[in-house]
Image (cartoon, rainbow, N blue to C red; front, side, top):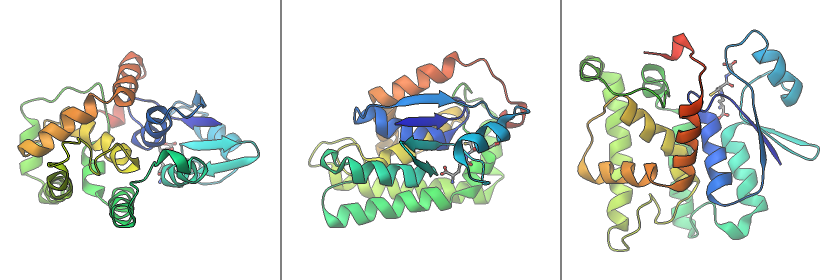
Length: 222
Ligand SMILES: N[C@@H](CCC(=O)N[C@@H](CS)C(=O)NCC(=O)O)C(=O)O
């Protein structure tokens, strides 16, 4: 399988299936197409054969899958023994629900806080957040989702949203890095979750590789 991704520092959609592949030790190769170059779109179209022209793309023999969520669903189907989704029907439905929300919503978070792993939070970031009630509402909603799920896990002492790492954690990992990049205040349970995500080997690996990238995209630098 070949996963084609964009810049690790900036591409949250690329990060998600990459984390799933890495965390579950699924063999794959990767190729990077840098964003915002003159030939970016042409390069993506050559691989993707799809006028949407976005990354990530997964290629498995003659099958080309576009879209981070479709890729993760495909991986969950072909590696069903690895439990990429939580196992019980109820938890699987809950996980799919929050992943679908992440995939389609939280527009204000995504617009205001571009993923930028190399960005260090600065003291004035708080001002940006206080002035933006829609961004604040997105952050509060994510805090609520995480808190409600993490409470269910406290007895089992497992760190992730549904106990073991799943596609749901991969989908929220780029939110964790954004919260660090922009210095978002969040409750203690969520802070611990953020730390656990950052300490997850696949996430660490992505972050370390992102930090080695030299490409700067000025429009993504807030
Ligand atoms: N819904 C898509 C969104 C993918 C997306 O927007 N990817 C960005 C990179 S993070 C992209 O390919 N942008 C193309 C460009 O900027 O030329 C998914 O989940 O894969």
